Image (tube, rainbow, N blue to C red; front, side, top):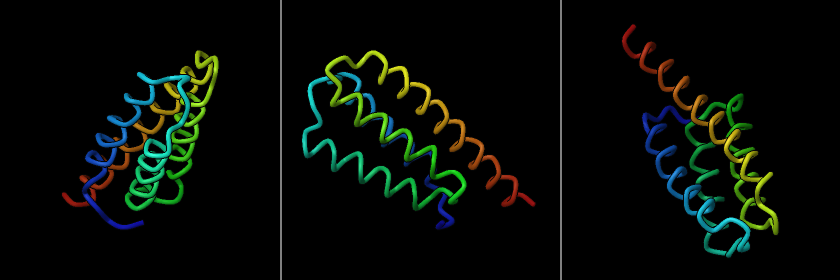
Length: 103
């Protein structure tokens, strides 16, 4: 893990792409969108500790299922839960870093 203050920025960029995935649910995973999702995962891996990377991986995998699913209702629910968990992880990690920096 790199000690970077960009947790919220990484989450914001990822959220923007996830919103696009949701708007296009069930229309297939275009190569450009897949590259964006993979880039977000790499970026999140760079700013999250290993223990929290699972949340990022689950979110990106769920997003890909939403894009590819002919019936995206269940994958959309899974994505919402994974996205919520990732948001929680990022906010918790950012609070932890702020406390360490203040000490």
